[in-house]
Amino acid sequence: MTDNPNNNGNGYHRFHIVAERAPDVEKWPSRFNVRVRRSGLAKLIIKELLHYGPRNKDVILSRPCLYGVFSGPVGGFMPRDQHCVGCLRCTTEFPDFVRVSHNPERRKLGDSFFDFRVVDSVTYEAESGLIPVKGAGYRGKFGGEGWDGMWTDMSEIVRPTRDGIHGREFISTVVDIGARPNFLMFDEEGRSVGRTPHVFQIPLPLLFDVLPKSAASERTWRITARAATELGTLAVIPIGAVLQYNLESDHVAPLVRPGEKDALPVLEKAPRLIEMDGWEEGLYRAIHTAFPESLVALRIPFTSGQELLKFARKGIRVFHLTADYHGRDPKGAFVLDLIRRAHKAFVEAGIRQEVTLLGSGGIIHAEHVPKAILCGLDAVALDTAALVALQARFHGECRDRETSRFSLPRKLTLAWGAQRLVNLAASWRDQLLEIMGAMGLREVRRLRGEMGRAMFMEDLEREAFAGVNGYEPGR
Ligand code: SF4
Image (cartoon, rainbow, N blue to C red):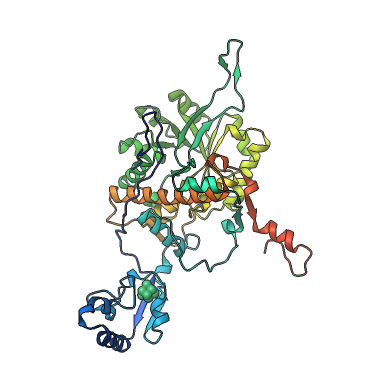
């Protein structure tokens, strides 16, 4: 679903994601409950009928809602809750007989981290490919825990990159995956000697992470593989599923676990990227021997800087670091701090340019992507956000990667699922462009680790209130 409208015959084309509406296949509880006192509504309709006459019956019966809640076969006598957007016009105009309230059933979607508000945003993004707009202004908090404790600093001189969003200039979301030496060396004849760059590019800093066991099936693997192909990115899929369902392609990164060495020779061609699930010396050597031209990513939970550098010394240049689905490590540290710690370790070792950091876990909102990149990731692998885009239901708290249970709609089809993921990526990329435009940045590679553009609530509060009676750091 990428096209090249600007292909000028010289090989240049502008990356563009074609989003198409993909409405929910499973009926979820409506966001709002609309309750109408029938006698009050009947009086209103009679009054309007006398005023406007019977010719305007459709208009009269649809009042007072612009969104069709009162436009069913019997008008507002059976309001269609699923159309309500919560604008509150009806209750403001007719407080005597209309009541709108949040639907408690809707609040049960997701879990304590991926709460129903995020579910709402992600499902809207996946359905439409558009950016959710909260028309009535933001009435929430401006700071908080986790990602909400970080803000991005917008530049005042942003005109050129604002144009980039609207098509006149270009903001690049291309990222490099692989290894680049810090410098190149040449012999006296000008031939390159020593290490050379070994990278490939993906057009946006989003990948699809391996699905949890409860959501894994032939259909879901095909969905992530197809969406990755249409977006030009990668889907991480266990090597067993890749072979069983014949999913080999440039857009699939097989995930190989210790003990699955024997599956490697069955692959027909060298993947661009192979993920190794945990470190095992023998497996690493086997992958290198079988596919010397492939990049090998080490998939491990976020760990200390020393540990990461130890793997870098063994030759690993691509790291896929994971937190649990709530963005925490076993000690409770949040993914934002974990990313910063990993990035800093490589910066201090002087090899940050040589490695690629992919991350997943706790990155569930469009805004989390630029924040994660600012903290030091090169690209983000989507996990629970992709599941919610596919209308997955959470069973209890879904935190642990191994044991969390999700169920997917029975009507899930390949075309619908792939389109939902493409739409989600389109919306998140547009939001990334917005934030880069506002910062005056022309490419996402320059956003990585750009901590000068990040502000942390804790730091700002300390600067403002340290020494003031009652101030308690971190609260
Ligand atoms: S709150 Fe707005 S959208 Fe919902 S029923 Fe009332 S007028 Fe319609």
